[in-house]
Image 1 (spheres, rainbow over the protein chains, first blue to last red):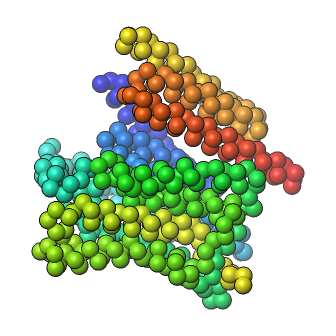
Image 2: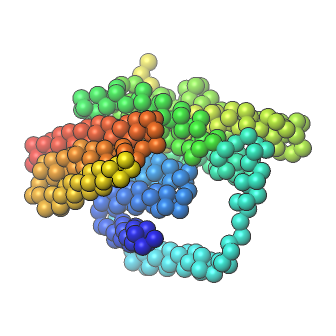
Image 3: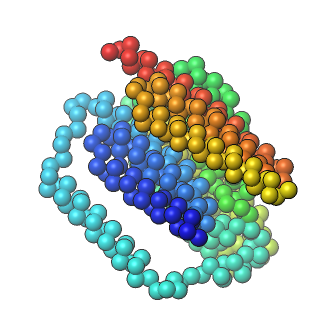
Length: 313
Length: 97
């Protein structure tokens, strides 16, 4: 008991320290690295709270993809000319005040929760067998809160469109440059040849296991994205033109399959996003597989960035 | 039998933790990037190896044990590659200055 308390207290203190350092750090690179460490520590916190699904997502997104995106942004900023100027003091104070207000609001909500927090967890656990799923988190994501999950995937697509819209007119539909990432050394090429077979198996396993164990489309998709990025950064395969039909198809296949099955619910069951009796699990797996592909391609292209040149003929 | 297994675990995991501590001290105290990378990679290989071997007697069957060894192998691979990449980047920046 006391050992666990000591561990948790140490973890919380480290987390706070990392958060503070990340905000206080002057250099963008240091701030980003601290933020990534913060994400990884937060994943351990989720494991301590027995939320392994969240921990996996936090590691993949908070520690991994967000970190790489921020590093890429920082590298682009460093190249940009003229350098970004100082933000003036009053703006900083306002931003600080707003952050403080948000934090205070959250703190008040958390501290004034009733002792028995309202929860639907027992009901989810009771009805788990009906959907044929073994992982209650998957049941919440794809059965009880399917609309949220669907919208989340659409938001991811919108984010990618936002990144693409930074392209110059003549590069529209072209190939992401990847210039911020250094020319690959032979060691990186070696890694990019060695790791993807292992990573692909782990990614597919994560997606498949998500129905019964922690894992799922997001976790599997981010591993697939990482493998593809590794191959692109090692220049083993070129980045695709964003206008390529197969790219567009893979990007929308997940949300489209989700929507199609959602509309099927009107006909085969009684409402939008409802699954017909007995077919819940197979349909959910179809959606998960399609979503894994889409998430993988979306995340990889998010990191690859805006198109910079037209494909060579 | 459990008693022996527990002793093995405690000894090996403690030794692993000691290596991690030594490596962290090295990371903080060594004078330049290359020596720091050196300290860090020793920790990854030996420290994590000892911890994984210490956990093997507690493993829940062969599959579980193989998973632990798989994790160790992957961390070994990433440690070796990342240290090489960092060392290369250091040498390149030293040449430029």
